[in-house]
Image (cartoon, rainbow, N blue to C red; front, side, top):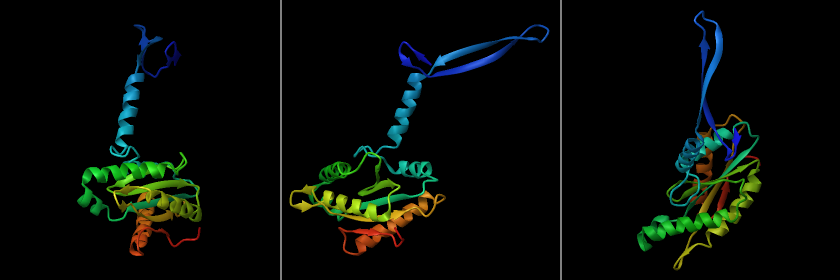
Length: 204
């Protein structure tokens, strides 16, 4: 309902009222304002879907997003991870490593439209969702992101990233199957020398 304080959410309870002879004579209703409670629930859900360090979506968000996009004609995903990130942590410390991850997400987001969500899969691996984008278009975007990653430095160390790109195979494709194909393309990029973009073997 809309009141003096704006839109309010109410939870209502209703029960019938009967006369002594069993005739229905009315209804008793009680409404409880649950606006604040609803807002808290939304905040908790948002925190559960958000990576604490970088502020982008987290792994839990992946399954939810793919399920919401079920029925979409094409959903293309870009996966990438940082090259030799363990060396950054070992050489400069984990605080420097965390700083790299934060700056990397900032550099990537600066080159993404809002409709293309970025999430941290875990460690130094990330995904970008590109609904209705062909493999060729996503590969071109991945190349932009690859160059953006190289703008992040730790002293003399230049950050590099390898990229794998894959699309869903029909509206009924599962999140796990799509993730596996992205990982396969990403693995091929790393095996091919790192700091490059590889698409799955599929017509764009």
